[in-house]
Image 1 (cartoon, rainbow, N blue to C red):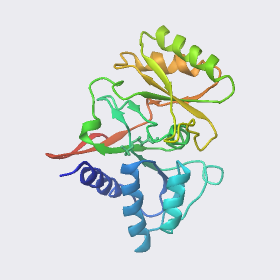
Image 2: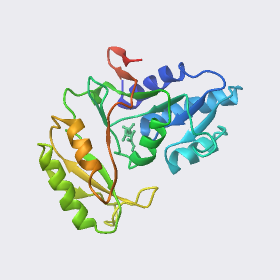
Image 3: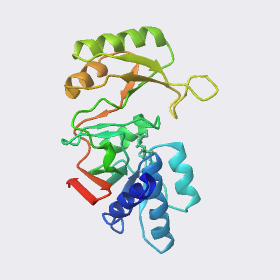
Image 4: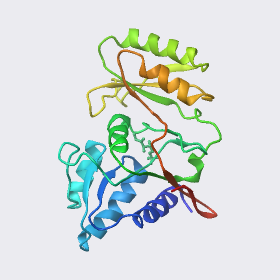
Amino acid sequence: MSADELKRQAAARALELVRPGMRLGLGTGSTAKHFVDLLGRRVAEGLDVLCVATSEATQAQAVSLNIPMSTLDETPALDLTVDGADEIDPQLRLIKGGGAALLREKIVAAASARMVVIADDGKLVPTLGRFPLPIEVVPFGLEATRRAVATAIAASGAAGDIALRRRPDGGPLVTDGGHFILDARLGAIERPELLAQALNMVPGVVEHGLFIGLASGAILAGAGGLRLLGR
Ligand code: 5RP
């Protein structure tokens, strides 16, 4: 089975968690896209939900499927968010932001009573950090912020290269919020909580891709079937 088929299986299982009347957060990325697609089919059959998107791309997809959409200003408390992840550890700590949507993803997850991650089981790792950690920063003072980020990373006991994420044409990638992304290649993050705290203290850092204490469950699809972590 291809990785894409596994992602769709995980998305289909997550759809079983959706009840009529729920307020849902819709994630971003190729796995979340399957969930939105499947949700759109249920909405076309009459399912009543109200959703908030974590990116402009997801918003456009949901609108194209006639899924009723809201905002966190109108609907500040959500029942369930379903989103993908770049890495998941056994304690349900995540790295997110490979699709550059980490800021809205974290805000939406924090506004949700429950966040369930959907992924192929290749995303499950014993230790976070093989995937480069995305760090969203304001464009002003980029080099100074990059140095301060390097210092924060070192203070937490980690180390590695930090690169500005670029578009295919070479310019800096700009997020939905108008910010840049620094990708920190750390290899292993032994103390994610400490690193998260250190990054939170850096002026110019808007958000980082360490999601700690946000995911309540994960649905992981693999060759051997579905595996559920948490709730
Ligand atoms: C976007 C994300 C995505 O959820 C993450 O990158 C996983 O994407 P995919 O499902 O395409 O592997 O965090 O910012």
